[in-house]
Amino acid sequence: MKKGAYVVALKTDGIDTGWKTFAMCTPLTAPLFFAEQERSSVGKLRVAEARRICMDCPVRKECRAFAVDAGIDDGVWGGMDPGQRRQWVRTGKPDF
Ligand code: SF4
Image 1 (cartoon, rainbow, N blue to C red):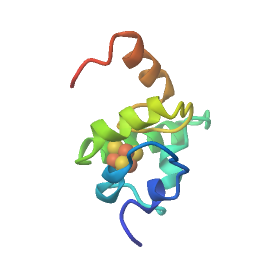
Image 2: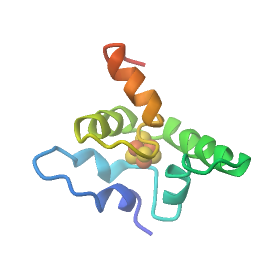
Image 3: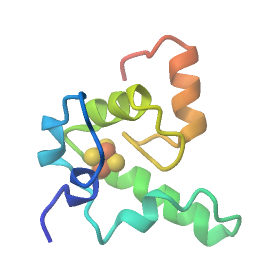
Image 4: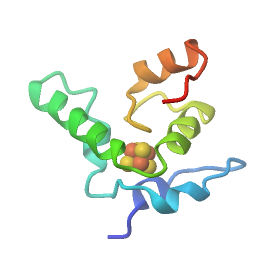
């Protein structure tokens, strides 16, 4: 499957999403990115794997900024779960 198809399918009216062409996530890995609702240890492992994929993604910063700007409050985006993204915003969006 085409890389980045997971984020390509998003509704992104008015927001620059040219970065999504370079996304490391795919439709096959998408379930990993929304496993935070799972209370089991398997769910935690899935989220950890999603975050690991993000760490190798060349558009991690753009993806994280997109999720915040679009108000997305679920899933792993740019290597962060929703709580981590809220923390990132509260602390002034530090660059790392
Ligand atoms: S940072 Fe993670 S969620 Fe965002 S495009 Fe890359 S792999 Fe996908």
